[in-house]
Length: 276
Image (cartoon, rainbow, N blue to C red):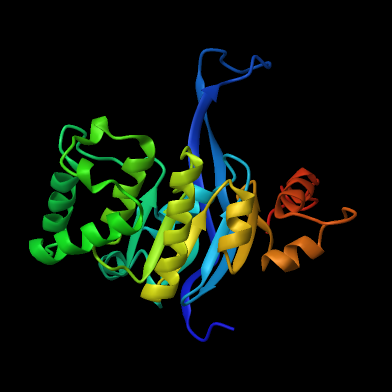
């Protein structure tokens, strides 16, 4: 049981406005664009203990990345509250930003610059000592299996897997106590994926950090995460340890987390569209 609460979301809701053509129904203007609300998150409750690796899985568009962005202070919830070690992500935004870092599948770089130059620039943004930040970045890159002979190559000449390792090194420069990993292994080759997964485990064991891992890889979630939440249509429909989730599945014989995912996300959720 984790003694301290690292991350908490209480009934968090996030709505986005989408535009579309009005229908050709009577009394409507066929050319007029109308606005409609898209619920990305609906009354989400999550509590993550300090030092825990907590997984988020779900179909595309289920709200995983939106949840991560709320915690990263990139989106403001429309209802509910979210906090990191007791600090509200809206009213204490700067404090939260000092506690977290985020690595996403769409990590952006200065592509013409080298790995070393991108990391030096990040160190300046964080007001870190250049020498210490450089040593820390090199240590992380080596532990991730990054070929150090390529550190002065431009980012545009590196493979997708190498770029993602650089993104992780950049994310850890500030030694955050909460890491928000938004699909960090998507698109990686098997060797790079294993390197990143092994490092995620070392983040927890060696840095006593809390990790929120959003992933589509059920095996990854099963092997890395202490607990996993399954999302669908902006809601969490089940959460627990991988063993607890597997016990929910009605399949015969050995059950995988993928079996649970398919069974639960394929069910009709009775109260899905009800107002709460």
